[in-house]
Image (cartoon, rainbow, N blue to C red):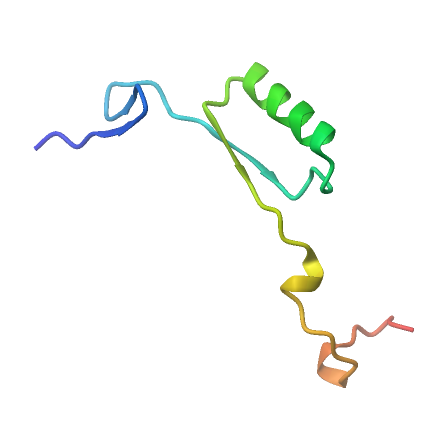
Length: 75
C-alpha cells in the first residue's frame, strides 16, 4: 500500500521531494515586520511551510519563589 499525504498541491510520499517546515517559534518577538522577514528568509531557503507560536514564556511558566524553582545562582 502506497502511503501518501497531500498538503495543498504538495504530495508527500516516497519518491517525492522532502516537504520542509521551518521553525520560527517565537523568534518574531511579537513584531509583525520581523515575522515577515523570517518568513521571507525561510522561503528563500527552500521552506514549504513555517511553524509559528504566539505565546509568551510567562503564560507557560510557574511564578514561584519556592526553593525547587530556584537556580543556584539566582539572586
